[in-house]
Image 1 (cartoon, one colour):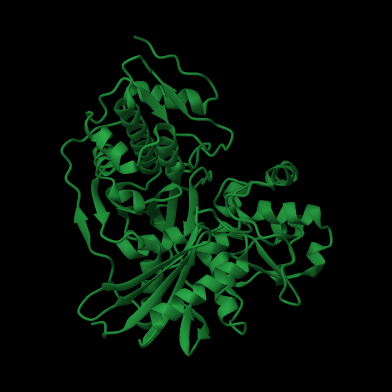
Image 2 (spheres, helix red, strand yellow; image 1 turned 180 degrees about the vertical axis):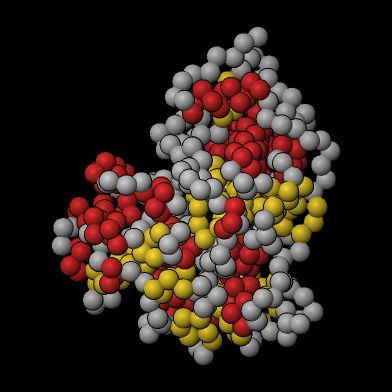
Length: 471
């Protein structure tokens, strides 16, 4: 049995710092939460010192007057924070959404004799850290000689809180850099040499539950990337139980047992060790999930609550209009940042409600199609647990629950990644504990599959063609 204690989890997110304090007296309860945006409009920041300052402010607020047993970390993956010997930035900070290094990555791939997908678990993408490093090195050819430490966002903040903390990274984040071999569990020396990235500048890979540093006498636990942390919070590290995080992106994370890994891995889905054991996460994404909802708001100058109510007035899956949700390109397992979205089948009768319904259906059918492709490679979904801010939209949740395979549940806390970080801290203190956020079932009035005409529209866009709707 877990003794009563208090823990803090902190999420170094794309647009804000989020932190929670949890208690374990008789179960798990979220006692307090803090959210500190980087900017009033929710824009991301590339000021790593601001991450650290806001993180410490959040910790001070949550720890005040409390006895905190440990602090766990999570955050956005794929960032580039390169430091020199004086602890200064050796290159501009880049985030996962910065695609500056696309051409540099393409040049490396063209000259590479092997398969990056087979050797790093993922198709080479400009989202990942490797591309950002190549870009920074092209701008500054002396960077390789000056850099002494390459950090992800959460580990930079941990080091800022304790400058004497060990230089380590969890395997989940390490794989997100695309210079780590998750199958052999080591940094990829040949790839490092080709990228001009010194091996000495990379941290030591460790389990997510390892302590590395101290803040005000409280152990700092390494943690894992945001999707792995969210999965930890909601119990989605068990085969068959998937996590669907609805935030900036729509991210479907499905556990895959190491023994079930296909013999020939093509890297189309993202593949990351969870950091909590030997198993992997298979991840598919809708990159512009949150941006699509903001697009709807700007298109109609209405709140999401109003638009959600409009969608509820229309039958799920029954509209004529079709929407393929690639407003910021397609994500895994068909990654292509150059693709565009499609809204087809409009008539003079296509009012606001019909268009919102088409968008909701398109988002849900895309996620259902991704889940179907994951099942085909051995990662089925019997239960899907939804988390994130968009779970407060009942019409959207109902649409997702209608199309997604398996029983859908919605988590009762929006900050699942921060809670997962706190549970990672608990895992350090109490190995093998099984606490997680409680969930409530979502009523499924119907079970739908992606429509044939929508599948045809999706296939046409993925193939780079145009869809011609008949009738």
